[in-house]
Length: 281
Image (cartoon, rainbow, N blue to C red):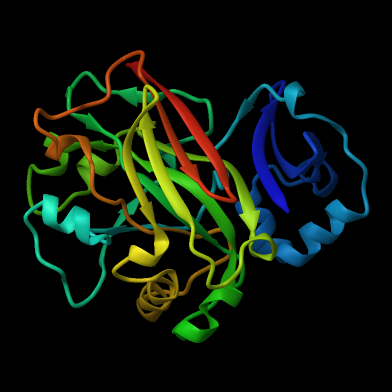
């Protein structure tokens, strides 16, 4: 099943997507945000609610997409999680995952502009796969990690590179408002097998910039879920972004940064295509 978060008119909501038609679950449940709905009702109830109802309107009738989970309690991102990216950054593999955080206000939805701030001209793309948690857990074992996942989505961990590198801590460059794309939908795990290899590709103005498969992850998705859940309880709606492959703009010769008017696409097999224009603030 696919879930989307959207705005229709002046109202925020979320729903299930079926054959280009939207079942407005937020309107039925009186809950505007998918994260809150997952925390209150869990995934199975949302799927059952979608199954027993007919569509309310066409996807064409929504005003805009929102980030798939617009209200996560936590967003954790893995850095340096593909060897090609480790190599291009002149780093070394670490024994444990490199993790940092993003905030919900730094995210935008599918087809919404990612914002180039006036403080920098070094706005870089990072195509990634996002995992959304569906079941609460602490100290989750790797062999049970998949059962805690609601589904997968596309993510663009847009990075303001000079601000990211001000110090050894990456938080500023990863959290300028409106710099991270998240969408277009959440594809649930019943459509993607536990050991299925997914393909990830990033395109800038139609040119392929990054291409990889998930079997090349240094720390697998179960390892990331297990690791993060060791130090904090994962809640439904929490997001783990799994890392970007080689080919980032800052390491190209000459460097390639996103500019006003550019179009960036992140495509994940069996998940979809996240598309965002770049707009100067």
